Length: 383
View 1 (cartoon, rainbow, N blue to C red):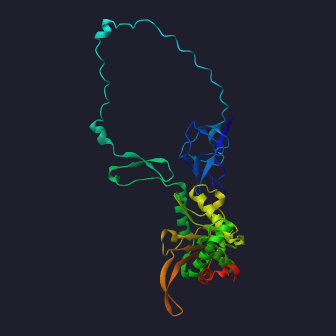
View 2: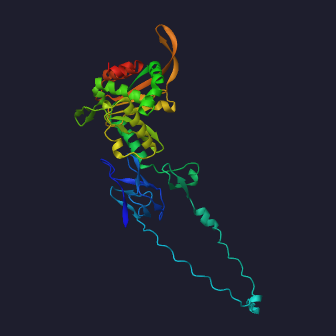
């Protein structure tokens, strides 16, 4: 029996996907639940797996644009192989003397070797104005790249659907929102000391490491409770206040930046936030995020510090009205109680939509984040 390989539902407002590559070849034997192909939409990349085991037939090639429900291949379940009959016995050896060649056969001249193909004529070589070179894209499949002699030192590769969407959304954010950024700096000495004291016990108790992202997430959630306008959005002429904090966490992947969402972050424990962030980041880098993993965010955190960024102005993730930027922790001299001391400092940035969020509200939000990170007990006591 043949079972169709279909494109799954792609999520709200997503009507098309591109087959990035087949992970199996035509005629391969596959197992049930084994990944067969990778697809990419304007929001995410994901794998399609086999429902049953059997032999694969490919109906749509890599690069094809397909809709949800489209049949792109079939898996034919194989029956158990019947035992093969034994081969027939070899014929008895012959005793006939070998035949001597006839005189005409002995005197026949050897045949000349095949004539090699004629080289390309000079006019034809001169008439070629472009060449095609296979180039492996970031999605793992080859694309023919045309380059003229004048472009011999460049390479042209089509943008993937995900990269095109990232580009379009960033331009949309710049055009549709009044983006402004406010900055502050945070002394992370107390937070780092707290993490060092309890990190091993936290990991032993909850089975996950205690990272900085979950601590910043907790601080942001507390600040959003006090300044809810930063967690709101604009729809037409209405301001939409979100009762829950669906926290987007920016993750860099080989295919580009994606922002999976930690839903109901306001109701989660620190360990639950940490565990969810780790799982989402792992699926994002493996290209296994589902469309729902990327939908419904109300506020975003991005960490450029992992790449060494000291300061940046993050761009909003529409339709959200705020994004918090983390940066590199750096030992810097600061004035503390009349003394110059060296402390682990981080610049933090809040980009916000000034159409909705006033400057005083943005600064108040960032100050609340700073206060909780510099005195971590406030996150526990919610003061």
